Image (cartoon, rainbow, N blue to C red):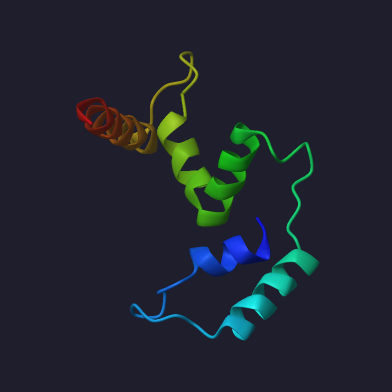
Length: 96
């Protein structure tokens, strides 16, 4: 994006008023100077989703919901509770 595009795209963002052009220009220069670059390994959608889930703490919740009990092991109270949570979660996601 060019500097003029950046300035144009950020018009009216201060409760309908424009921020000072020199401020936006300086902000643009800083963004260009400190550009965020993704390496090839983390740029895939699945890797990005995993990173976001981990950042938000959702990875543990998703592991809980997707957890499966080996069939040969007897179910304890915690396992029954996990199955109940999984069933409720799946029922809600199937409705959506």
